[in-house]
Length: 263
Image (cartoon, rainbow, N blue to C red; front, side, top):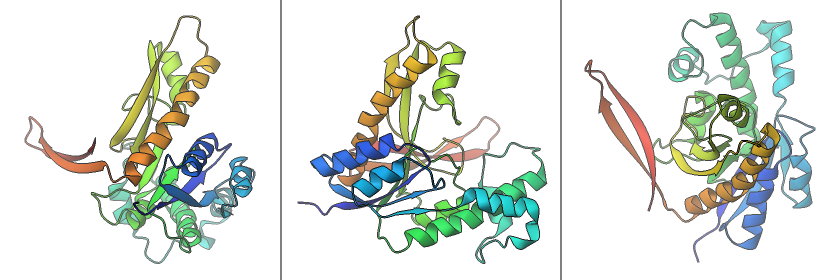
C-alpha cells in the first residue's frame, strides 16, 4: 500500500470542510493523515474538531500583528528574507492604482504573519496544505516557501462558487445576487492571485426560483463536503498532473497558465 500523505490544515472558522477531510482520512477514503491544524482565529470552532481527534493545533495572531503595525509601523520588522519589490511584483490581488501605503501595510504584515505560520508548521513534515475556510489571502512570500517546485503545487483551497466566476469572500452571495441559475463550488491550487489558481474539481447545483441565500449556502456546503475530500484523495493517489501552457495574445504578448488534469 502506498505511503500515507501528511496533510496540514489552516482554518478560520467552524471547520466543517476540515471535518470532512478528517472523516475521509479516518475511513480510509483518503490515504493520509492530518498532522496539524493552524488558524488565525483563537476562537475558531474548528480547533475543537482537531483537538477531539488529537491533532496538534496552533494560532498565528494576524490581528495582533496588524494592530501593532497600525500603532507604529517601525516596530514591525519584516522577515530577513522578505524582499518587498519581489513580492509586490508577483502578487496580483491588489488592483492597479491602489494606495501604495495600504499595499505595503498588507504585504509587510502578511509576511510577518506568514513567517510565524511557517515556523509553527516547521516541526511537521507535510505533503499538502489544505485551506479549509481560511479567510486570509496568502502572499508569494508564503507560497514560494511551500511550493518549491512550481509544477508540483502543495496548497489547496475550496471556494464557494464556480470559478473563474465570483472570486472573493462571498461566492454564494455573489452567485445569488447575480441571478445565476446554477451555483457550485471549486477546489483549486493556490497561486499569486485571488482564487485564480489551477482548478482541480467542481460540483454544481441548480438554483430554483424559491431558493434563498441560506438554501443556496446549504446546497453548496453539502457539495463542498463531498468535493474537497475527493480532490485530496486524488492528490494522495498521485493522480493530479500539472502542466504549464503558454498563450500568445493578438498584440504579440505572451502569458503562462498552469492547468491540472486527472490521470
